[in-house]
Amino acid sequence: MAEFLITTDLRKILHVDIDAFYAQVEMRDNPELRNRPLIISRDPAETGGRGVVATANYVARALGVHSAMSAVEARQLAPEGVFLSPNFKKYRQVSKTIHHIFHTFTEKIEPVALDEAYLDMTDSHLSGASIAAQIRHQILKETGLTSSIGISHNKLLAKLGSEFNKPNGVTVITHDNMLSFLAELPIGDFRGVGAKTKAKFSALKVENGLQLRQLPKETLRGLFGKMGENLYWQTRGVHFGEVQWQRQQQSVGKEATFRYFIHNEIDVHKAFKQLANEMIAALKVKQLTGRTLNIKIRDDAFNTITRAITRETPWPLSETLITQTAQSVFEEVIQTPFSVRLLGLSISNLQSSTFEEMTLF
Ligand SMILES: [Mg+2]
Image (cartoon, rainbow, N blue to C red; front, side):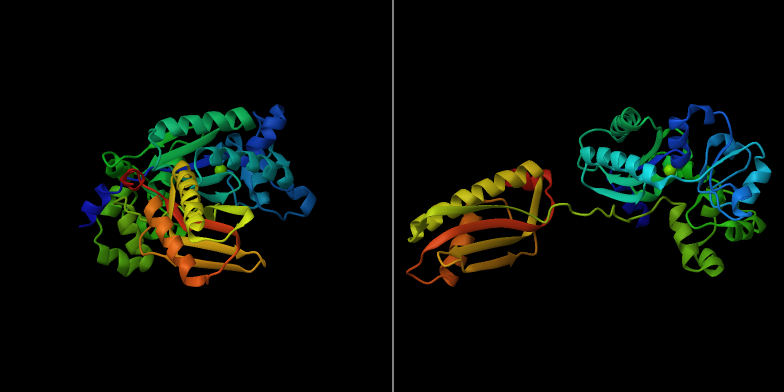
């Protein structure tokens, strides 16, 4: 059953990550640092040995320096290393540019860090590789920084992919190459495998994804609990987590204020029809639809009535249906005679509309 589910996951997820972000920004601004071990951390000599490495350039990494290591240890590994205190103000500014670039590709962005995000590009007709090339080009052009991108049908594989070809690389993991990719992956690269777990696996002679895959689910659960079961699925490339994006827009709609107040139902109907028309056009442009229809009515005394009608499934983008619904709500809540100065329609609980929904009406 699970194997069947895997092959039906047709999403297009990208994980974008700037290479050694803080270090790369500093090298960009001071090219002399490029060929020296650069450690982003307060100098242990100035802090009495305290401090932790935020990140390091690849020259320092080649010497064994890595993030979260104590600065003293980093100094021992890289005695010639340059220590620079992090300049978060500058990094946040660069980060803004990077996330702005993401937003030119999609709204479905899950930011993970200043320099890192998941993008759900399932709706794009372009290939993941082509999108990745454009994003990397744009980041380089606007910030001078290189990035790495992993592309796959889920977040787990996208993330593993971006790590795989670092720095300055792209990895596409498909349904076809997924199992061989995971087979060769060192055990320490799987999510949640720290030094302790790695040592336990070492004792079991499990060093890579292929060996991990040969362990029964029960064995893994017995050894590592929930995380063990999680690893069982990881080595099969199964992960259903969605890209957690913030819907930027809460609703799409239109309002009309009447210079001459409306007093009869024919004009109300006409107005709703026009509003429905414009709202539907806006929704189509944004490729959105939603489950809640909001109707707003304001009378000449500025009393405002709003009604919301939420359906199980998104509202069909049908002018007739929306106009009639609004009209009947109006007749239900407004008594004659009336004098209306404003009418409004909007759709909320938005979601992206599929091609089928777009063309059905
Ligand atoms: Mg990074």
